[in-house]
Length: 86
Image 1 (cartoon, rainbow, N blue to C red):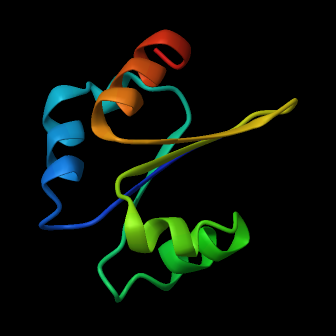
Image 2: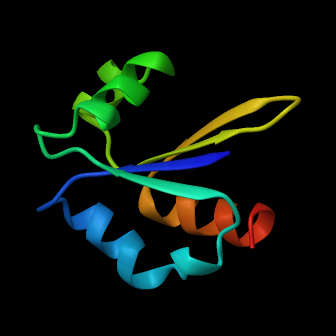
């Protein structure tokens, strides 16, 4: 499962949404952190990413069977998705 955490008004988040073909990413779930999405906040807490989200968005989490990878920064997220998930 691959999760992308974004926030409205975040320039880096908007860049990822406009420069990456998110529709072609297999098993991608996008969570918008808008203060009203309890599911997005619960997922951040479950994966222990709350403190990271306060400093750095967007966050991509690839929760594979063998390992879990967290990627931040729009350029790194784009490259990771192109290399591993498309």
